[in-house]
Image 1 (tube, rainbow, N blue to C red):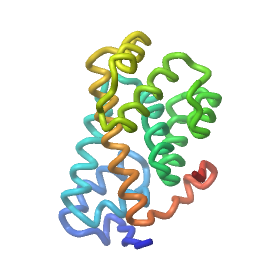
Image 2 (cartoon, rainbow, N blue to C red):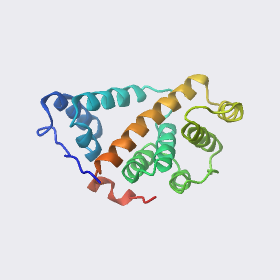
Image 3 (tube, one colour):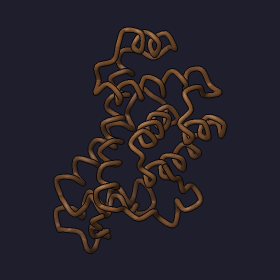
Image 4 (cartoon, helix red, strand yellow):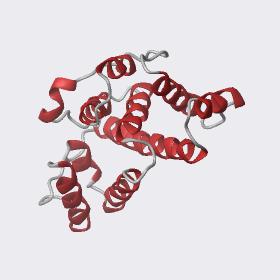
Length: 183
């Protein structure tokens, strides 16, 4: 596997420094994934802008992490499963839901989270060609049409992160070591 440079704010290309610094301020440190993405000013700027937009989502932080873990497990991305586990804990997602998501279980101990994860997996599995049954299930669980679009956006953002982590061989950050996961 190819291993790319994990940049700091100081070592990143000039045009990547501002977005990387902004991310460091928002998260508290520069995650290794962001350090890899910073090798391309276009990629880190896009990553940052999409992350910023998703924070304005009508989905709660915990719901966004349900999507993040479901996508990362489906994409077999150990770095992102660990990161989204930490973010899910910080967002107050129930430990049983987190454990079930990390295990790839279809049924979660929370009905709404279960519907959200199932819809997310269906989007990934079908490339967005979900059936009426999957769409009705997520809408029937109380999610709106706006939120369905936000789930798709979160899934796209998380997939980008998964692909970067996998292609670049992003090492797990020390801050995430206790959340390590294997496919």
